[in-house]
Image (cartoon, rainbow, N blue to C red; front, side, top):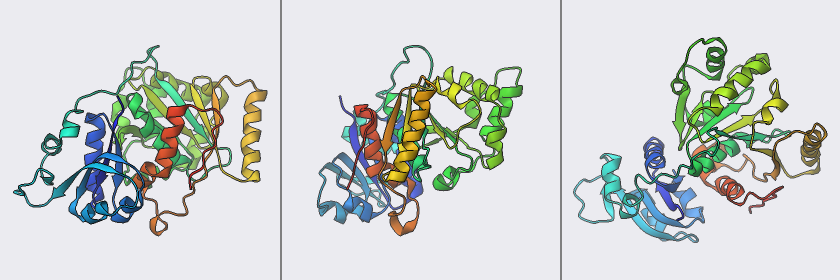
Length: 332
């Protein structure tokens, strides 16, 4: 049975992200977030259910493309007598109780049991340093969520992830590596974990010198711990090659080698793929040309939630579902 396609539309970003996070943890559905009426109007996706604030009602009637089978409107008055209107300021459980389509899906698990008891590692590396390598990897984290519980690790030297999602944690990946390297007893990895749009993540490095100072042995200890964790899929973005990079790649089920259009970038991608061939790296890899860029976002700023649910999200979901080798996708 396919997942329901659900659109969540509200100009209050904090509210809709909390709503989405709850749905992703409790309902077997694909969630698409819209925080501006313009983005929903121009979107061409088809949805089984749309849950929207009243600001989106008018544009939902006149979208030029994309069907919405059932609409529910989040209203600010508690006593509206209409089954399509739901009081916004109540528990999400109560909201879901009024949405027939989601009530049927609540509690359905999309988790897949691991055949070997180990977590599955999926890697991303861009030899041409694609400007969307981080959003692409985060979209992978969300996309693989239908295969179970997902952890995302951003191993870039300087990560903008905390800025994109507006979250800064006290302890980061460096603290975890230190504890793994020095601990003589068990520790709880969950104390380092936070959730964003349905997948877990650990706060990345903030100092570019930290990454190169980590020895290969310590990285291997980390991946030993992760392999035995309760995560079904672990998505890892390599900003630059870490110490012991090739050895660690042998653990990975798949590596997406991310490039962009243009002869210069193509040569860089080809050179890296030839390098993997030359050293007989035992990892299944796939060249991906990602033609999107970060330059056409609203007001020139990152709207990471909409980016992950827009063309980039569609692109990633197609990669995951088709498993086509050397895929080259193009979106107008």
